[in-house]
Length: 63
Image (tube, rainbow, N blue to C red; front, side):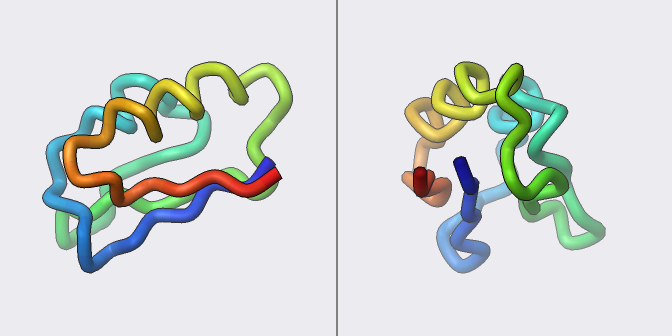
């Protein structure tokens, strides 16, 4: 699985980092970025949760 953050849509709320710190972190501009590619198998469920809960839909997932 691969996670992708659309930086133009990210509002920097940090929910993705709270849900899945193994895959996401906030950069200097307070925008989420992916730090694990591919998503580790043990983090796939929390990564899906992060994508589903993103308030702007800025996170997409590819299998």
